[in-house]
Image (cartoon, rainbow, N blue to C red; front, side, top):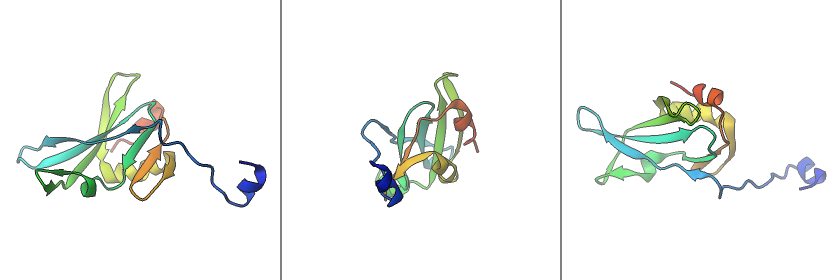
Length: 118
């Protein structure tokens, strides 16, 4: 892409193919209702769904609660979690690209990952 393309507002295409496609794991709360957890891992370019509650169901039923789990590779542990939709708003600042259904997030440092804690 040349300088003139940039001046005309043409956007460089971003490669989504080398990113980890985050999918949820489901767990039960003490009352038996399910919640979904999606991991965002340090140093990993990741595709996060914008509306997982529309894409995923448990036993044919919608899942109301969603968490973003923050995984550190340098500490080799989970460093926290946050309400998925609140955290997704914070993650937007690290977005490389977005489409109707998903957001492509750059490889995050430990400091950037920790900034997302709830």
